Length: 325
Image (cartoon, rainbow, N blue to C red):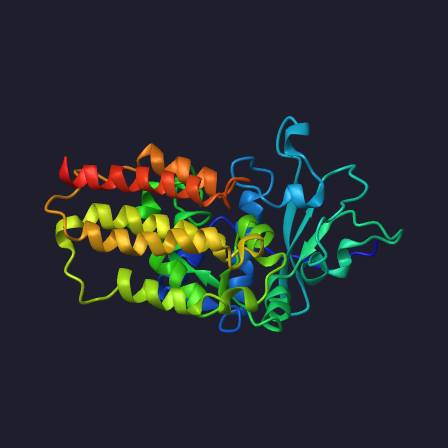
């Protein structure tokens, strides 16, 4: 293959520079504002996650089963081509990847295909991806604190995995970030979850259908005039639950999902009820009913209204018990 790209240098001190710069940026910035910087961050995020079984959501969409390999099978390098920064990913001796979604035509660069017409590597230039999805009405962005807590975290073992429930997201009002993105038709893009679960099939129409609901969430959960200090921890838990539901609603597989919408509406009513309690939870602790409810919601039972309502009542009971028992 004729190599027309160049390696992009990533010296040891680069991470410190990236961290310093992102702290100077706003909470959210787009590829349109910072095309090269945002592209480099996305490349590093993808590089950080690929092949890590706890994080990687992209391999499966390429027909790769990580469990078939003893370790991380992926090799990668950050590259440049003209004015673009990108990433090249490949598995030695793997002859052909088989993307399992038509939208990969918006994501993969033609360099991914070799002279024999086989897709034997993954080449992505994130800024090109951002421009293509802008034509669908979606603005791809970097959420600064999410990047700082994951692949830019100063200590890799303390990185937050957004695919799993974690205390950091609860304490940092993850739901507030989610509702802002949804209201503005924005999609975070710096990880494999973003690419595989949010971009494949992504359309502006998936966001616009629920705008009235997102405005209601903004008003009822994040009104700056709310005086809710007495139930801070319980508020955070319930807001986090709504944030998880909103992240699902931002994925094409769950666009306009009525079961999700019903649970959000019930949560807004519960938020008002929690505000009337006299005590707060001693600590931030998600009850098992939270996990059970999410599991049911994402299963074939999601459209069984009675089952969902039953599990939501258990979740509600657990939260109110933390406040009153």
